[in-house]
Image (cartoon, rainbow, N blue to C red; front, side, top):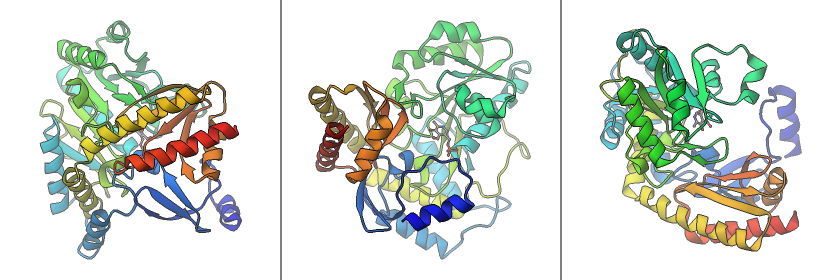
Length: 393
Ligand SMILES: Cc1ncc(COP(=O)(O)O)c(C=O)c1O
């Protein structure tokens, strides 16, 4: 293991704060390191491995597609692309799809859609209003859309045309809206900043405000989509239907993909406006089809709602026993808890030693985004480890 870590240090740009573990294999909710140690994975590649690791349906779909056609380009029609787009349209409030390769890239495309919409339908408006503490990606425009100065500062100046208002503050959003505003971009649950939920009332009020002002409402469901919150899309909890949805992470169960979904009103791209070499390639889309179909066949959306409720209940139990745990929050299987002291990184390390993978989004906040196939017995096992790790702090 030490050898791999040293080799990485020599050749890799040091942008990731990695845990000292070399993962080589996975199955269901478990992964194994290069020395054969097993870990329960309650992070699932940061909300990516929705089916768990190496689900047979996903593996078979990837292998079959790899034997047929991996890539051609978007100069030709591609059946897996059309089939995946049909499934996403059928499951959402949107009518049209564009495939990209990552979350940031999906959001870039959504921002371009908003600007084009503003040009065509709102007298040249171009500005996007987002939320403080949002996270939308690491490209320049998505960094500008990300309402967190700590990510932006080293790369200033940011591209123009982005504003941020506190989440759940409708008067602030109204006050920030001007003739330049084209769209509002929100995560229904802010995942990266520690699982902070938008109020359902707020989302409905923002929808009404966008209708009144002729603004597009864009939901970044990159972390919250694909059943994670106990609905296929998190917006369904509120009933507020966006004009644009962005997806990535869990969409192809671990194969890189991103998607922009838009309703007819917002789908204003014309030939030449946008594109991607890899976006929607047959391999990624075959993995996406297998992921969507397996979520459906195995009832994983409902399962995520049930097991997520059980997980939060068990964490509440932990909170009652461990005064260090102060709050528990989340929806479905996107869950966080806060600690009374700045020991979240230490707790992650203690859990790693005991065979549990979790993640801290800040010095006092732990986030859990397990595979949707997680079972109650595995929740018990994980909470048992968390308890021991807390005692050890
Ligand atoms: C809500 C949200 N949007 C966008 C992104 C960026 O996605 P990617 O890392 O695939 O570019 C993330 C990644 O964590 C995310 O959580």
